[in-house]
Image (cartoon, rainbow, N blue to C red; front, side):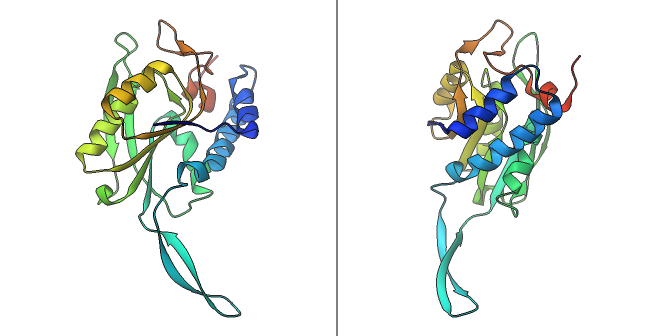
Length: 207
């Protein structure tokens, strides 16, 4: 269920993001670039249908993606991945899952949901830079499956073994794509070596 996108350019860009001295506006650009470069791997097995195409010279055949693509960023950090995806799949629809982590229990708190109509018939991609404890990913998948979603994928920059283990237990059918699988979580639920708080790194909300 886990596929590591082991491309040297992706690894180089992730290394820049990990660097604590990289400014937030550069982190934002790098995340957008990594996401755009990863689209092809995330959708490499997407179903297509044949279509007729008329070129300036003659008729030929081509393909188009059969089902609509829906991007569902997990707020807030997942928003930083949307534009990169849209650079490649410009007609993707967008939904939103709002969750934050209770810093005492490390459990996800659900505060907002807004999804496109008929989402059960679409290919849905959850976006979140970090798969740490796995709580937010599990909660989001629980809800999306309750709405009938069957073609569900998850993309992150960095994953922790603990989060992968939780997803394997509860959602073994969900394909997970990551640029790196890191070592472990610390006692506060942050990924080691990780990159810090992804939202803070993206939006400059840190000292």
